[in-house]
Amino acid sequence: MEIDLNADMGESFGAWRMGEDEALVTVVSSVNLACGFHAGDPWTMHRTVALAVEAGVAIGAHPGYRDLVGFGRRKMELSAEEVTADVLYQLGALDAFVRAAGAHLHHVKPHGALYNQAAEELELALAIAQAVRAFDARLILVGRAGSALLQAGTACDLQVAGELFADRRYLPSGALAPRSMPGAVIDDPKEAAQQAAQILSEHMVTAIDGTQVALTGSTLCIHGDRPHAAVFAQAVRERLEGMGIQIAPLRRPKDG
Image 1 (cartoon, rainbow, N blue to C red):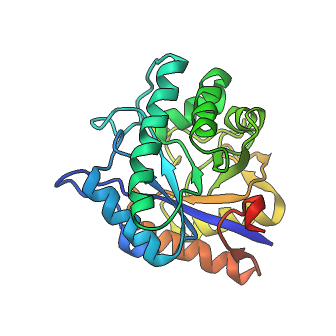
Image 2: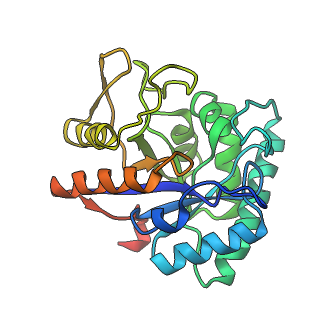
């Protein structure tokens, strides 16, 4: 069995520092890099791309709403055309640094409120998928397992990947529990590793209310903006490898 272990990175901005990028990039198999809207700036993008290339991990874009103050976690009401344009803009910005480093973009995973809204709203999801297809139809579109974003990606003839979460609790619906809900964020690396192990071995997750929810996917996320993210990623990786599960980037058809 094989699973991609991904993390969001490059979310610093100016003098403000976020995450443990240098440590985290050595543990995961792919990274999702902020593109300057919810976080990130040209120097951070340049530096983080270099880290990813040196580590040999797959590089993905992590576009979000234009909301530096709210870290892209606040819902915004934009037209489909505006969303498509904003995503295209961000993909182009990150791709410049990736190409300059002699690498290529591998996937796209929306951030924060944009990700969560697109999981439920098909029109918004289609706006994102259409931007990805227009930019490069070879890119993999990553979205929450079972979400409208995956449906939209498939409709746009993109390869899609359902995302699972090790360090967040789920609602009985299969959606992530809101961060405002007590217990929504898992604060113990061993608990995160246990949740990852349960999902991959049983294709089920224990929701925040104790019910069992069916869940499958091909990439597993550790949030890079959380405290001790590298410790969490290492705990999850060791647990999964101990089960005989290989950690490897998502495979595109042409990659074999």
